[in-house]
Amino acid sequence: MKFLFFCLSFLMVSTSALAKQNNNLFSCTAKTGEKIRLYISNDHFVISINNDIIKSRNTAEEIKDSFKPISEYNDEYLEFNASDKYVSVGNFNQGDDSDDNPNNKLNISYLNDNKPSENYICTDDYENNISTLLLN
Image (cartoon, rainbow, N blue to C red; front, top):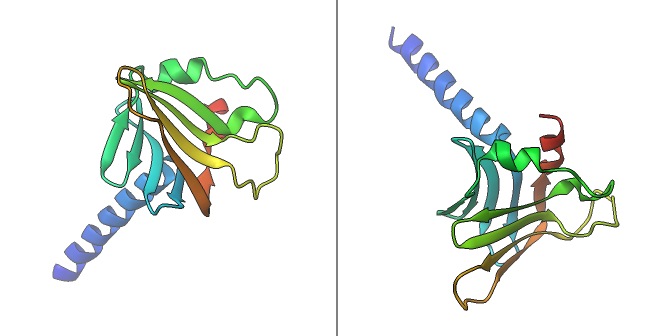
């Protein structure tokens, strides 16, 4: 019985971890070491930078409805407002469709303060699934 309980517990934890992993629209390790993730939670886009969370002001559905690429290259890039910040994340090199593009990054601009923008440039360790928003 204990073995069955252990197996069931392991299955639940594994399924939860897999669901969290598959929920990533964008993830990378910044050159400065931060772990960055973009995902959807409670119908909002969420950026996590290590343990810091930035949540989109509008719902994910509202942002997805306005997500229409201008060209064939910019479906790997997303922008949204988040309370007092403006977030840009993804592949900033709109003219290069190569898979080894080094221009995946996160920019955070402050709307109300005179704080400088925060820029995180990704290492080669990145995953960009932002284009899947067009499929949903």
